[in-house]
Image 1 (cartoon, rainbow over the protein chains, first blue to last red):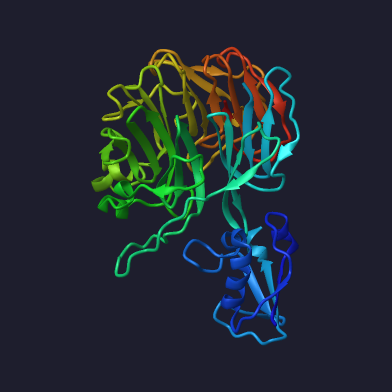
Image 2 (cartoon, each protein chain N blue to C red):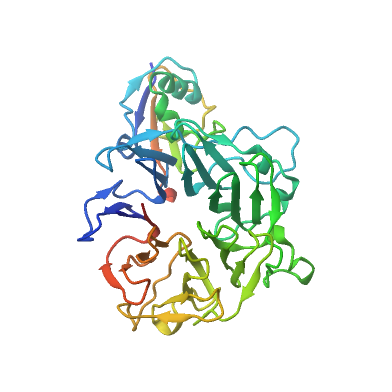
Length: 85
Length: 349
């Protein structure tokens, strides 16, 4: 199953331990995390459900968006963009 | 009564008496607004990466709980509104009784009646067609930075969207602020109340018909409940600035922290001063005792100046991390710190 890993910067604000979820896209993987940990959602997505401007997602080392596909063994990294700090 | 200081890198709660800088709260995180209300403290954070958050403490800052953040609804299909319906910043928090109000960028006013557990966008203001004429002042989008509460009357100021007032607790709104003028606009729009850039609006609690405004191009005063304003030309040493606070009982007494001008936002002659009037703006005293009078480049933001409930004690904080306290209405000042992070807001409560 895809693995979702959050930056330690985010873990300072909200509990978001690494987890494995069943999903075919980045967005579905994040939704699965948010179902288990609802508070995380507002830190990663804005109120319109879009990725926050200063949050980056990488899938297997490549920049990705919410609609991009993930594979069973993918690693999804949710990181802070350097533009925001 | 403690002093709350919201900064670029945390919140400081400074106890009355010794006035020493204690341990920071939210160290490293920008605190855009703070409100002591009903025995609780509310702090709005603007995290660089992870958005706006709101926290509440019910034990004077010993611990904090994240509560709901004001959130904009989905923008309707087909609207020509150019403004993203997304929260950028909680610019000000105010409260009375169980009512909390949040003024935000991009221009929405939010209300909570459950201690911040939920927030509702005030659609009666947000849906006004005049909002399309508002524009950003200091930020990309317009924002509500001042909320003056007087019973059912709510008066707000927007950079840049003028001064608006509700007489019915926010159910309906009227554009106020006749007499304000914007010298930065084309002549045809100079007097349009809907595009004025009031930097900060303050209402005298005991004389609620009296309002003071530090406007982008000068100081104004109203004695008819913000319906109309008159320019106060006696302000010294300059008419530009952001902050204003008014004595809680004497509407003729108000304080300002002037800067040179729009395009040079530093103290006049690099000497930090506070301007005080006690006669409704006919004359001003320039107060400098205890303030740096050499090589001072401190700017005081909109919410960086406050007076306590007695009207005798004031505090202000600057963009360069200076914090000063006066216990004699500004006649003399004591520096509490020269080394805080850039200060967004100070507040007694």
